[in-house]
Image 1 (tube, rainbow, N blue to C red):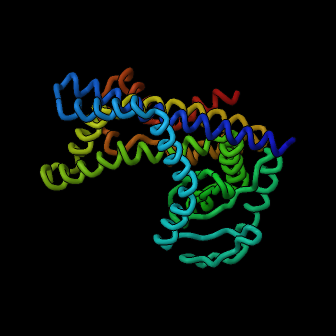
Image 2 (cartoon, rainbow, N blue to C red):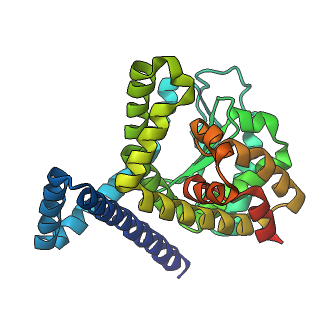
Image 3 (tube, helix red, strand yellow):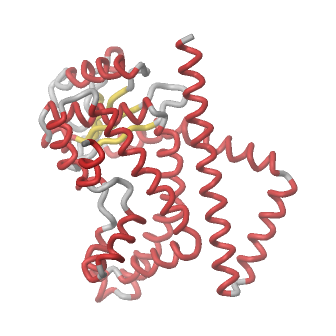
Length: 321
């Protein structure tokens, strides 16, 4: 009976995530169509209309391809992440029973992070979830993230900077928060939508930014003119609606995970961990900082609602009280 409940819960998480991904695609296409209509860009209009006609003719096939795309990303996210970290030569595998492996770039003594495994096992049992695999990225950033376990176990990545700067109690709070995401099946939607936004918004923005700021406006590259112009164009053409909705949903997921984690760890340790980690992982792009400072407070609040994937610390603390 318990196994059946777990399977149904996982299936519901997969279904909700798939629905969200398809919604993001539809929103991008609708906004692109509207922008092309307003700007009279006939080539984009014709391409959009051709795609819409194709979807209307074979909606089942479109839905199937979308589901295959999602499943592929869920399955490949973990091995691709591990491969990326391995190539960087900045990966330490923590000791997790049979998963003991050699350190590739650090002289950390074997077994130094065994206590993370014990914490993970204990919290996983409380949440009635499968125990995740933990890897440690030997970088100075203060960050942690969780990757979905589609067929294999979930994967939690801690950076060395986080382990160095947080106390054991604070690290336990971060671990509880990440495991709460696993328990609530947030990892499926968070992983796929992050990749979609990365490929459709941030990749074209940064490519254009490099070309404009380092070729055209080389003398004023510190102003990030190309980055700001590229970001505005991409958001207005097709990215704004999807970006706004996804970040709004992500913030709600973070608040839910906070509430679950608070039932598992000491409150003060959790609040301390929030202050240390939040600023490192949820800022808007640094190139927009100086623009933000020039905006009226009402506009600042709107921009933050669009770009912040995590709630502000005051909002998170207020939600916990």
